Amino acid sequence: MLQVIKHKVLFLVIAAVSVTFSLAMIIFFGLKPGIDFTGGTIVEIKAPGVEQKIDTPSEWIRKTFTDEGADVGSVQKSGDDVYIVKTKEIDQKKWSAILSKLQEKYKDTKEQSFETIGPLLGAELLKKTFYAVVIATFMLLFYIAWRFEHRLYGITAVAAMIHDVLLILASFAVFGFLFNVEVDIMFVTATLTALAFSVHDTIVLYDRVREVERRHPKEKFADIVNLAINATIVRSVSTSLAIIFVLTSLLLLGGETIRWFVAALLVGTITGVYSSPFIAAPLVVVLRDWEKSRKKK
Image (cartoon, rainbow, N blue to C red; front, side):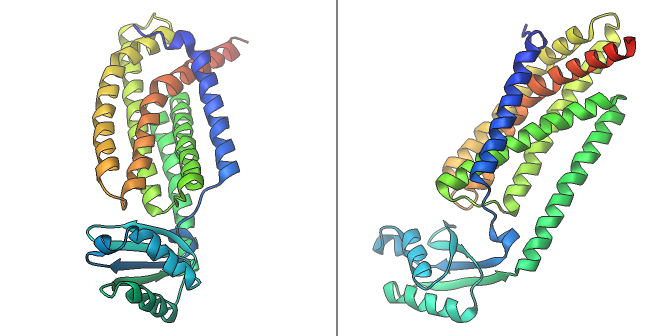
């Protein structure tokens, strides 16, 4: 039997160190906001057979844009011979000049789409994203506290969720520094989805804690939680491994368009399967013991 609660201090120290390290990475490297939040232009280009003519089409496209004064955020391949370019806002006149330069090098280059997102729309989207995360956090806090009839369950579930969020953000701060990865609305979607998995695992664990507590009311709470962890961890790991295998396949074979969306889901799934038994559970035991000691005084 795993003795998780016996080593609860160790796991909580590891969690504190990982949170501190994540905050340091976020502050040091920062996050690169995509044009979904800052505003800019998205251009979709089709260049049939370009890979047979040019060794690195993405770099050729990026260089052509930058030579014409465009500030390119990313160039992603999407399907056969289709490339999506994200830049700071450019007008139709500048885009026409860039397209002409592309066609000078490879005449079959064609525009698939040209879309501009204004900075006001980007700022509004960023604000709505922040509100959505805050509202979701408080709803989870109150729901779990109500569901298990004690505020500590809600507090510890949200604490584990914050741990997972910080690790995902820190990962993308590092990815942004190393690979120029931007944070966009797809990243937000992936993060919220990963958090849902994490909270789901925590709710399953707490539900088993309540069940064991009803059957063994005289047992120590720490022993009850440890029994609940051992009863649910195999199911949790098995489910998460199935998700991880699928996401790993998508990461390796799914193409550049969804690569970082999948990476965010993968990081969130891994942190979620860890945080429920090794952060939320030890923390609820520590807080419950602290609460009891206060009442005795």
